[in-house]
Length: 217
Image (cartoon, rainbow, N blue to C red; front, side, top):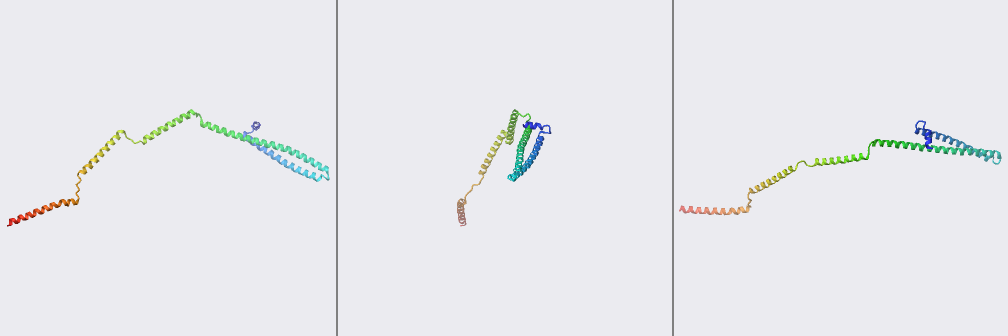
């Protein structure tokens, strides 16, 4: 049914616009039926009112009023059936139009994905990822090499030998300096050593005076 409706309007511009035009036409027809139903409902109410007014005084008039009321009610039933069919068609067209737009959007997205992927295959993806991993490892090795201190093992040996020479030279200078340090003598000990010398000098002066006195005699 949906395909028949879409093919029926297929000759008029594009399918999407044809569906919209059909929905607009169906809604307009639905509005006409609703106005007709309102008119018939007013007639039914009037005929019922007339029948009640003449039910006792004029049964013939009341009977004619009821017949007209019944005819209007039958017409109302037919219009209700037509209105139901129009509403079903509107819902069907709206659903079909939505489905068509959804399919168009999905096809467009699928075409875009196909364009993005192109000739991409899982083998190519695996190969690319392997190359990326390899290049990352190379980059890491280069970074480690650049961050490692420059110089060879020979340079390291020369530095160790030079450091040992400086250490020995420093120790030799300290030992040589220790040999030339003057001996420190406490002040008390110095005074004790000086006292015998003073006593010896006093004895020599006394002997010299005694010798001078003896010669003078």
